[in-house]
Image 1: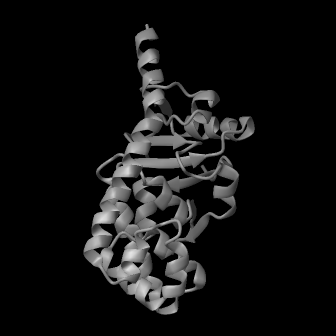
Image 2 (image 1 turned 90 degrees about the vertical axis):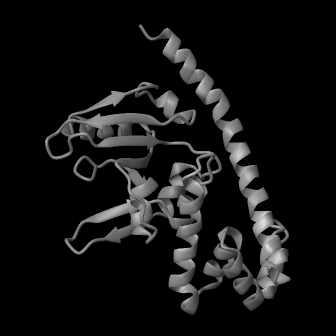
Length: 236
């Protein structure tokens, strides 16, 4: 992707590894800019990987712009069997230009640089109907809190109050920062239970919050899945 100048951001399980919440993944998941120029660069990268589009939908910009994921399988000897999944639009996640502006770039010891979704955007992207995403979402925010709580910034505190899913840590944070917590509670009411020091009530409210997000994701994907089913019936 770097060789061909593709504007894309690593997300999914491999991005979680970079953020310290390890998740085994056989796939490379990318958020990609769906402009015509960038998709041409992406096609060149796919050719270099000897990658083919698998399953449905086909690799066409209109499907990316409607929120579909497009899937590829690599056949190059250095990446044989690797699957690449790309998306341009995701439920509740900002447009790509904003994702790119606030991306995280990580430099490895061997000098390679990797552009990732910011932690906040990765957390938002994990709010799906899939069972495996919610434990990972919890670990992502928890790992960030445990790493930075001793030298936290106001931005950290607000992010954690909005996204922490570990009751005891949410109570700890709210007790330490009651004024900020009271402000966040206006749009995330369960934080009020954390301010009151009630982890049981926080846990119950987190379950409701998760169920609401899962239901919203199911409703979001319903017409997209119907479209895929139509494509399957039309396929020769």
